[in-house]
Length: 186
Image (cartoon, rainbow, N blue to C red; front, side, top):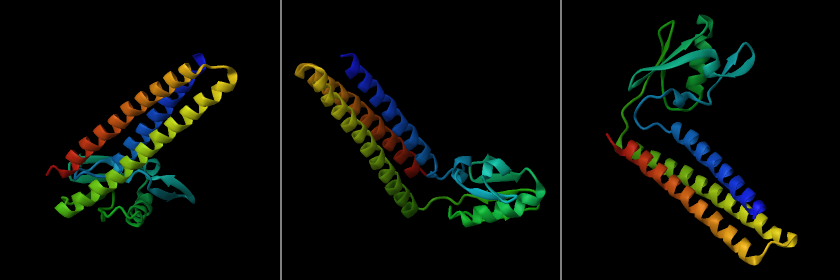
């Protein structure tokens, strides 16, 4: 039973990782409000090295519709602006000589529906990841038969893995409902 407990705990840890990854991916999908996370993943050519935008500038949101990018060095403003423009996030940077402002336009109904579809894709990926973890845990438990673990103990272990999986799938569904509500609210 100790080994089965180990595999169940490992499955929970991996499923937690899948939820954390989902949260990171969903934070990149904007819901009409400006967030610094919208600029995650943008790389700037910082003296010949690709550096995350956050490593070359401070990013803030002075209001719900604006992102303010303030490069640490004035001469990096052009590189930061170029990186944002080339990132395909759909925002037009405005350079005032010291800062870069990104105005977030309000979402149209059609754009909101597209974002919900993107969220659904991320949710489905998270569910697949959770189910793959379940499959790995169950196969590890079945391999314990060679070590003399009883059929009843294996069945009980698989049932526990399934209940853990069900709880994580419910968390993913809840995350989807929250994000969909966030996106569709005007």
